[in-house]
Amino acid sequence: MFRPLRAAMSSAQSSADHDDITAIRTPATRDVVLATLATTAVVVVLGLLTGTAVLLLGLLVFLPAFAAALCSPRQTAMVSAWVSLVVIAPVVFQPGERILDRVILTVFAVGFGALAVYGARVRIMRENALVRLRSTAAAMQRQILRPLPLLTDDVLVDGVYEPLQQDKLVGGDIYDVVATPWGTRVLIGDVQGKGLPAIGMAIDVVGAFREAAHREPTVTALVDALEAAVVRHNDYAGQRGEPERFVTALVLGVDAGTDTQVVGCGHIPPYLLHEGAVTVVGAGDEHVPLGLANLVDEPRTVAWFPFPAGATLLLCTDGLTEARSPEGAFYPLEARLDGRGDITAGRLISSLIDDVRDFTAGTQQDDLAVLAVRRTPRQSS
Image 1: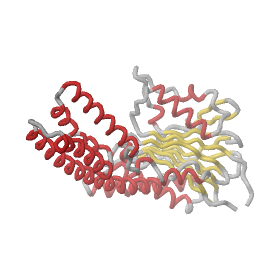
Image 2 (image 1 turned 180 degrees about the horizontal axis):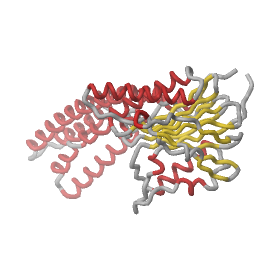
Image 3 (image 1 turned 180 degrees about the vertical axis):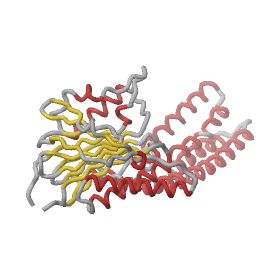
């Protein structure tokens, strides 16, 4: 019996549902009050010391404009009301020869305050629209790329996914994990090119993988289904005048046996970490990327390799292997994996990502997808 795929930690979904990108942030009201009072105090003191109170009070007229750019409409209205009060008070209690200047300043204070509140309302409306849009995009990402970590009867899969353009949430790199009656199927891939057309191809490939993984009993038949999906997408793209694209991909088949199947389609081979050793597996059995099978006569075949309990497979896209230092050197992945073989899948990913960020000085050059597939003892129902 096999168990349905499930999230290994419920907090992964919870944190995804409350992502920071879907929140409008405004400063705390207490901070706004303190900043407003401090600015007013500075202006009043300088005005008393220099005898140019009217000129300096004029600077306060622009304070609501700063509030409109950062604060909520209510906070902006509070700042505007305070500034108007500070400007009007001298007109009422200290009339003098500069009464006309003070009246004009009062009119400007009230007018700019009203405009600031209106500007804050318009800003919040636009930000709310953007939040709704990004919330929809985040929900789409969770449907296209399942939140990690994921657990099946055979493996625990943890990882990280970082598109180059953070505002898009989804890029050309793809991954998925599906529990089937024939074991667990794992996909990682990279769509050629960038932009929305690449994302469209990514959606088609992931959808084909999820459907075919439950239908096809062999890994090669599953890869053939992915090939057909890429060909169909390219046919539709050609009808729209768009260029054809290929997809590099790696498909794993992990079941109750100690050996694991892998089909590499022009993709970076996996790294096996076990008992302190790092080994590249399936490196001599690569095939052409998805979408290019008609260019060769040989069919895609499966490579087998031992994947014992407690071992970890590292899968990645070229966003990791082709990451460059400021001097132009490529990230030495295999060398950096030494000494990391005995840590948990989550710690392996986090330490590796921290390391590559240090190596590149924080500069990301491409979409990045990294998966750690940890073999777990198969559990009975």
